[in-house]
Each structure stands twice: as structure tokens, then as C-alpha cells.
Length: 149
Length: 421
Ligand SMILES: Cc1ncc(COP(=O)(O)O)c(C=O)c1O
Image (cartoon, rainbow over all chains, first blue to last red; front, side, top):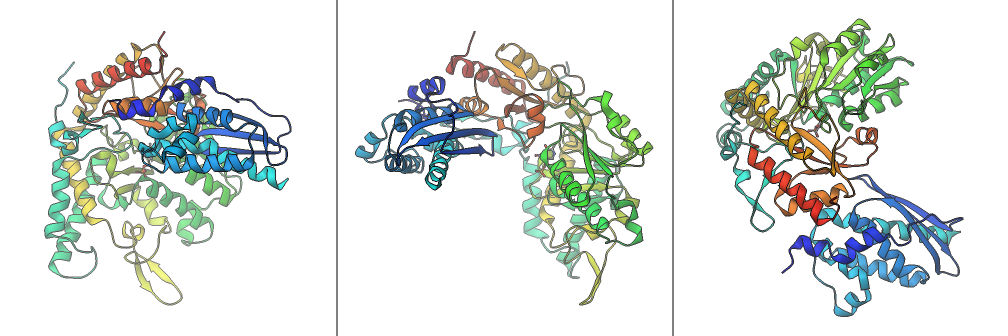
């Protein structure tokens, strides 16, 4: 059986931390948010461009560990082009996964998470949950701002 | 090379395993030290026999508690080269440093009468810190400057993480306070205190030394160093958490208005006003952490039995082993001096292409406990152009096998993330 650490660093995570899908700055974003992880000083900026409550463009920049960078990369792949409602639903599901202490969610939910399900092992390490959620906090905040504009 | 010490058996926690049966290799002593049985027994023994509030009440147990508390103070004074009345108990070094900063603030606000004149700051006065400070010896001074209109200046760090002694002229006529670390908790560099104290004195500035890392690993003598103040924490010196101390030159403590106020630090209280006890009681408000002072006393006895010179020699050898081992891993860059001269066994480093969190995680999986993050010293990290690092730090109980395990762990990190050449 894979050790807890091998479950943490799934290949999907290692791949995405190098792939860095969506790493770019957007021109004239409708919403953006900058978040810092106070324990390590890691930071990320998420920017969104929006048409009729849809994330037509999603870009991010940041420095951080493999978990935080992979989480941003997967977030971009799964959510660019999607509706606010879908983004909120997926974000909520991912937060639920991070609260699950390493247990899988219901099969249907786990399936909906797609590549994010690779983060299941992260929830066993309390110090790393914040890394996984950093980009998602920024996305939620950026979407809020875009709604207000 | 002389023999390394071999005392890990005195530290019960080091006998445990972590992460499914792996031997714990504790390399985070820079954050907090593990405690020998003698310290745990002393605290328990005190609580079983002598626990009472100190300096209050006249019953026998209270007398014994007071005696234990004051004899710990005497032991600590002797340990760091101070007089009995020059040691103020605090919760930790952070509180001790704030105590001094708040004496300046409260005096500047007009408290403390004419005696406190030496602590009054005027707009344009300067406070000098350094780029190698722990936030505990930086943020209180930033706050003091913001509240009083004083100007904060700093001595920069060199590329290898020492204080830049070419730039001591930051300390000048306008300087009122020079607050600096005796040893960096990131780079491990030990400060040459004498030229800084000399320059501060010549300009009439007071000196505040952060002795958190040094007092735990080197022989220190605050009188010999000519310091005005020094701060340190018990938990880094094999003692309990919840107890630390401020050393203050007797004449200065006399002049200082109190920081935390309330019970146990007063003479006469009316509804309108209060007069305060002389130091050190003036600065020890509220019910004190008596058992922790007793534990710290036992820690000082333990360290004295070994001898701080011997401990320093032991740790010098570990520094050499750590630096040598790290040098054999080309992907690793040390943030700090790479020679053993004037440096503690505290080694922060960067692994090319691997974030410190990820380094720490793979080390943790092998039972290796290191620190990751900015270690409460963001500006120090910024001076190296990084956000965060991984840090291994050794102590009295660290052995050559621990360093070997650590170096093997580093190789595993390189393999795991595929960043090898
Ligand atoms: C150099 C230095 N200064 C100050 C501190 C603060 O000590 P404490 O957190 O015990 O107050 C530490 C420890 O973290 C330190 O290493």
C-alpha cells in the first residue's frame, strides 16, 4: 500500500505543479484577489474575466509549494469557461474534501471532483490543507468582486 | 575532534516514533528544545509538594514556593552573568522585548516621573535594529517608532547572512536604542557584540540583545558584554514553555515604568492612583509561572553539569557535520555562513526546484522533524531573495547518526521530486 506521503503526492499533483495550467496575468480583470499563507509567506493572485456569471477567463500567478501550485493548475483546467454556480459548487465540494481527514467523499461527489480527487490525501496533513485551499479562497474572493462590478 | 556528547537517553520524547514506526530525529531545537527528565521531575515535584502563589500569603507552602521561585532567579542570574535583581521573569523572550519597548512608550507618554527621563523618545530619535531579527525583536520596535515618531533604521545583512559590520555607522548621534540579535535563528550567525555595544555607548544609546538562540547554546555573560538589556526564553534552554526572562541593568530597571500592571507589582493602591514596587517585582504582575521557573532551574543545573563550553564544542562538531553533509548535495544552497566560524548549529537552506513545505514533508515521512516556513524572520528571508526555507537545528541531544539520517533524507527529497542533476 502507498504510504500516506505517497498518497499525498499523487502523480496528478506532481504533474500539475510543473504544468501550471492557467499561470498568467489577465488584462482588465473584472475581479482579482491576492492571498497569502501566513505560515510560509506563499502567495497567489487569481484574476477572472466574466460574462453573464461565467468565468470566461481565469488566470493566476503565485509562488508556493507543489500542493498549492497544483491546486491552482487543476482549478484553472476545471473551471475556465464554467458558470459561477458550477465554480461555487466545485469549490464547496473541494472544501468538504479538505475537511474529510483523508476519507473519500460519496462516490458521485468523488467523481465530480475529477483531478481534484487526487488531493484526498492532503486532508490527512492539517498543515497542508491551507496550501490546497489558498487558490480557492482567492477565486471565491475574485468572483465576489466581479459580481459587484 | 573531541567526543560528541551522548545524552539523548535523558530526553523521554526522543524515544518515541513518528509516522508509522520511524525513529524521531528531532532537528527543530531552534524552535523549541526537548526537555530532560530532570526538568519534568522538578516541575512535577514542585506541584506535588510546594505549589502556592508566590509573594502572597504567609503559610508554609507559600514560603516554600517563594523560595523556589527566587532561587530559580538566582540560578538564572548566575548562569547569564547578571545580578539577582537584574532578572525579571516573563512569559517568554517576546514579552521581555515588549517590556522594554513599552517602558520607552510609557515614559514617552509621561509616566514614570523624572526618573524615566532616559526612556523618553522625541520625534527624530532613532531606533536601530538589524535585518537578521526574529519578528519578536523587530515588530515591537516598529510599533514603538510608529507610536512615538521615532525613526527605525537597521544594520543590513551580508550575502552570507551575517551582520554587515561595515555598516555600523547606522548607529549615530540620534540613536537611542540598538536592538540586535546575538545569534540569528535563520542563518545561525553569531554576532560580534563588542563593536556594536561600543558604538551604541559612544552615542549614548541603550542596547537590547536578543539572546534567545545564544543563551541556550553558548556560555553568555551579560555583564562582561556591557549590555543594558537582554531577552531569552526558557523553552529553548531545555526548560518549560511559559517562562522567559529579561535581563536589565539594575540602574535602568529602577528608572523604568511598568509594562503589564495589576496585582503583585504594587505598593499602595487608592481609587485614584498606585505606586509600584521596585524591580524586579514591578515587572511581574499577576500570578506567576512558578512551576515553570522551577523547571527552568533544573534545566540550568542540567546544562551547568554538562558545561556550556562543552555543549558549544559538541554543537560546533554538529555544525561541521551538517555543513559538510549539505555541501555533498549540489541542489542545496545554505542561507547563512558555510564555514563553522562564529555560527550555531542552525542551518537554513533552499533546495533548488523544491518548495520548503515539500522538502519538510518528505523529511517528515522519514521521521525527520525540521522547520519549514519563514521561521518568524521574513525580512531575513527577503535579504536572500526567498520567501521561506527549510531549517535543521541541533542541540545537546543531537548525534552524528541524526545528521547522517538528515543527509540521507535530503537525497530522498532530491530523488522524490526528480530534481537531481
Ligand atoms: C532569535 C529569536 N528571538 C526571539 C524568539 C522568540 O521567542 P519566544 O517565541 O519564546 O518569545 C525566538 C524564538 O522563536 C528566536 O529564535
